[in-house]
Structure formats: C-alpha cells, structure tokens
Image 1 (cartoon, one colour):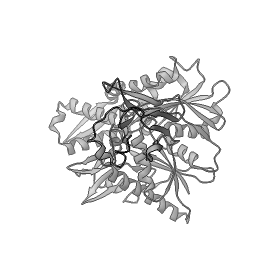
Image 2 (spheres, one colour):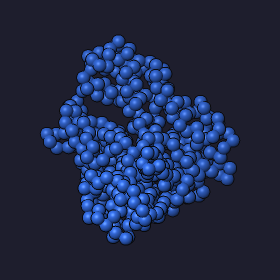
Image 3 (spheres, helix red, strand yellow):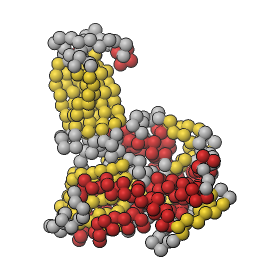
Image 4 (cartoon, one colour):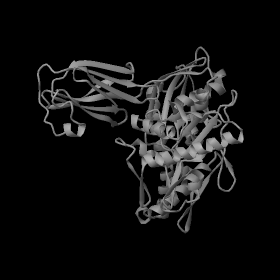
Length: 478
C-alpha cells in the first residue's frame, strides 16, 4: 500500500492512495477521539520515548517536547546530536527512530483494518531548503522501520500536485504557473511551479529554515506577558512551555470574525485584541513576502503567467496570512481547503504508481569542496554543483600533496558540512586509517597519482561522494 507522509514540525499528516483518491488517514488518541494528524511531539515515560498522542498525555511534564524536528535544521546536525527533553537528553537519531516507528505502527494498524497485507511504500516530504543531513536522517529513520521509502519530495512541490489535482481548470495557455506558499509550524518555503498538463517543473524556490507558526506562538505569548507587565525571565521553562501551548491553541482558534484572544498566564487571564496580535505578528508575515519577491519579479501578478498563489501549511489557516497576501496580490491568492493536508495529499499522488503526474525539481543549494590555494595560505569553497548545473560533477587531476583533505559542504541560507574525507596519495600512507592520517603533516609532492572525484545529488536531494585513486587501489565512498 502506498502513502504520502508530511512529517511536519508540529503535526504529521498521512494520506493514502486509494484507486485515484487520496484520503487523509485518521488517528485515534488514547481517549478514542479521531484526528486527521499525529502531533510531532515526544516525551519520556520513565526511560521510554513515547510519541504522538501518547506523548500529548504527558503535557506539563518536564520531558514533553514539541518541535523536536527543528533540531534537524542545525548546521552540523548528525544522528548523535543531542536534543534536550527537559532535564534529560536523547540524540536526534533516537528520537527520529522512535517517531518513525510510531508513525509506521499506525500505518500497519490502518492496513490491518482494511485486511491489506501488501508491503508499505511511502513518499516523504521535506522542506525545500532542507540540507543533506536532514534528508538523509529522515529517510534513514523511516527505512529502518522495515518499510520502503520510494522517495523524498520537497513539500511545496508536493502541494503543487494537490493543486493541479484539485484546480486544473485555473490553468491555461496564458497562466500556466502557480506559486506555492507553504507556511508550516517550523519552516517557510515557496516554489514557483510551471505546469504543463501533468508535468510539473520547479522554476525556482526560496525558503526560511526557521520561520513558522511556532514563531507566531512565541509572539503571542510575549504579547500576553507584556500586557500583564511580567518578565519572561520570571517564568520557568515548564511554565513558559505551558503559556506557548496556550498561545498555540488560541492562535489556531482565530477566525475572520474573532475580535479578542483570552490566554491563561499562570493564575491570571489576559484578554488581547486580535488586532494587537496581528500588529505584532505582521513583521514575520512581511518576511515571507520579501522572500517570495524574486519568484514573482513584479509588484503584482497582473503581468505574469502565475495563475495564483496557493496557500498551504497549517499556519496559513491564520486569517492574517491570506489577508496580507490578498492586500498585495488581489484575488489570485487561494488558500487550500485542506491547508494542513495539502502536502500529504500531493505526496500520496506522487507515491501512486498509477498516477501520471511527473515532477522535475530543482537543486536549491550549492555543493562544493573546500580547497587550499596559494600553498595553503588561502581556503576557498570550490563550487561543484549549483542550482543551474548538472546534478553530477566530475573532476580528474593529479594530487599535489601527500594527503588530501576533502571538506564537502552545502551553501543555501547557511552553510553545513556534508563530509570530511582524508585520502592518502602515497603508497607509504595508503594503509593508514583516516584517524592516523590526521597526524601526518601535509607536504607538496611532484607527479602525484591521478585522482577521480565525483559528487552527485540524487532525486531525493541526498549527496554521494566517490573518490578513486586507481594507482593506489583506493576507492572511497561517502
């Protein structure tokens, strides 16, 4: 059975493939109530990691943790990177494994209810500007559960599938592109998508790795404290978490007719005008407008081939978002009827082997290697793969030193290290381990061996590195 999984910062939504339909998979909480999402939260029950709705039962305990997925946006994140669960810590690898197993266990129960014993295959969504480590860690965690991960798709690209599936009549020969505006709990992405029938080509994409609904919750919580004349420093971390939780619930309850917000701050209640919250939140919304300016290239949509701006992601349910965009871009701003599920439905369409939809996505990061120039006096990033280049880069050259240190990195909104590879270039050093090579002084040599270096980004955005030194019988893969 095929599924699309939108692993979000605050919520995880699953859609199934069912004979050309893509229903959202519901989940029961411990009280038997049905929901169309699983909270992306974890907590410790004794020494055991619990996830989703079971973890929600532990709200208010010190180890209850929301938005753990934001740890994946760190520049140097690895599976061993620690994540604080209150006074305790667990590695992000442990948390991802537990959460992925929780999600897949739910899929297996869903299959059992349908008497379906076919293998589970899933397509996962990832933020468009997520780096190599985030993609690899996410894919590996779900793969370790025993299911087949058929691919990773950038979230706004998946939402474009859902748009075409639902709104194909809005596209014509003059207006054949859409701009997907995806504001979730933890990230913001936008993609300009050119559509030709069932063919989708990503023209360009922009994003902010740490901008989303979580930040709006913090704004509302701070506004409540300011109104009461209280200092945020006077709150314990548990009390702060409870206040932000209150703010999230209040924010999600806002509708266009709302005029007031009531929050519990400790033992006090505070009433805030919705207009005051909107005023405080507007700078964050304006940041998303500045981000999408390069995709539109004009002050309005009037003289473009963009059929519309499609709002997806749970945070776009806040009326302020659509109001702000419509004020600038007019009636061609459309909010998905299922903003929290749009990406999951698009992923399910992509996962469906009987679907004709096709996607040509675009690399949004620069991949390169740090090289030493001018006898080691200068270090610079040598770009190997750029958004406009082929996805495989090959270099063949003779080694100029006895040891080569290859530090591969990716540059998007920030820099992150992909891998550091030590390669011996003399027969005497060929038998040394990488740790042993670190103590070897780097010296120049004449007529070193021929080096074949190849870097590739696959369709899932994962980088692979191959270095071959045939004269020494060395073949390294990362």
